[in-house]
Each structure stands twice: as C-alpha cells, then as structure tokens.
Amino acid sequence: MTGIAALAADLGYRAGWAAVRYAPERAARTVFDRAGGFAGRRNGGPDQLRRNLARVIGVADPADVPDELVADAVRSYARYWCEAFRLPALDRATVASTGNLPDADHARLDAAVSRGKGVVLALPHTGNWDMAGVWLVQHYGKFATVAERLEPESLFNRFVEYRESLGFEIFPLSGGEQPPFGVLADRLRAGGIVCLLGERDLARHGVPVTFFGERTRMPAGSARLAIETGAALFPAHHWFEEAPYSSMSVGEEIDVSGGVETATQALADAFAENIAAHPADWHMLQPLWEADWTDRQRARMNETGGAA
Picture (cartoon, rainbow, N blue to C red):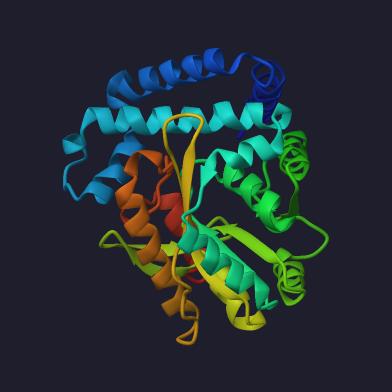
C-alpha cells in the first residue's frame, strides 16, 4: 500500500467510526446493506470472492456461482463494517445478548474453562468476530488475541484501541516487543482464553492442508499453542441471523495428540463444514488456495522454505 493510499484508508476508517457509531441503527444498516448489495452485483461482484465461493459450493466454474450468493456475501461483509463502526458506542451487555450459543456448546466451553489449563478458540473470518469477542468477554472476561500489523501505524493503532475498548487483550502479530506466541502461551498456562483467526496464514509459517478439496496452508499457531501448553483446542464459528441477531458454535475439542499438521487439518475440516453451512457470511476476498497464488506470493513462499 502506498503512503497516499494508506493515509486515505486511515482517514476513511476514522470517518466511519466518527460518523456511523452515532447514526440511527436502522438508517445505518439500510445504507450499508444497499451499498453492499450494489457492490456485490456490480460487474458480477469481486472476482476473488466469486472464485472462493465456487470452492465452497462445489462448482468448477466461478461463473456458475449464483449472483445472489455473491451479493449476499458482500452485504454480509458490509454488515460486519457497519457493526464494527457502531460497536464502540453500544452497550456491551446488550450486544452480547444478541448472540446465541447453543446450550450444549456453552456447556462444552464451560467445562474446558473450568479445567484451568486454558482454551484456544480458532475461528475463520465469518460473521462478526468482534461481536463474538464481546459475547466472550461478557461471559468469561478478557481474552487474548493477535492483530495484523497494518499501514500506516496510525491505522494499526486505531484497530488495536478499538478492540481493546471492547475488552480484548491485543498483541501485534509482528513488530512487537516479542513474538506473540510466548505471551499467548503464558495466558493459557494461567488458565486464560486465546482466540485466533485460523484459516488465512498471515505470518507465512503455516502447514499444508486440504480445504474444500484443494491445497492451501493454514496457521499452525492454534495447534502449537494447544500442544505446548495442554490447553483445549476448539473450532468456533460466528454467522449472521436477521439483524441485529447472530449465532455462534463451539465444536468438539480437537485431538492434538497426532501433532500440529493433523490438528490443523482437523480445524480446516471443521471450518469447511461451518462455512459450507453459511457461505454468504464467509468474508474471504483474498486469494487463499495455492492455485490462486500470484507469482509474487509463490516466490515469497519459496523464500520461507515453503512456509506460507
């Protein structure tokens, strides 16, 4: 991102948080819904999103992805941003009350937390992970997570401040005083909760998995943390219901006894099942599978010895 583009992005997010947070809810949601629908239909919608959704619904040609699904996916992404811009001004308990976690899933999470050995929740980019985080804070207190380093620094700081205001403990994925793995492990050994977005490998240290029948790489951090600390590892999911409501799931505990690659593949399988059930709420607009990598991305993978 160029300096001018980075500054424009920072100003845009600043304007969004300033203008949308105090707007009437119905008006704000209507504007974002219509804008998302327009963007999702314009020129067939984002090309990479369409290619990604083709894998999810099992069609070989991205042109066969229904236009309405693409439009719904962009509307869902627009809803995420509408809620993100409004969250700082909303009552946290009220926000948490709009999310539904089935009793069996809640009991599963309660039991793992009560063991006192820590819990790792790994989830894909679905629904509104910030809303899910607010629910988690309201029920269990602060949890730890990482934040992607953004440019310019002011934009990165803005996102960190935003999520810290929601009760999250944030560590930078890169460029911090120390790598985040050690401090996350400390939180788990103290019986805490760590939440990590798990299907896009930003640090390029991932492991190969099969995802919707094709090869890609996913972050190894969730599995590594569970193996090294003895924490329980669970796949989690968040998706939208009729606004302002949403639903969540906490799946069966992942068996990590087979090692990092086996556990990460099990997470990928759980992610795939949940994404297939709610494809419009998967916000993946970037290339994810090896077949879609650019030459530059492939070169970067070779530079890191094959780690994505």
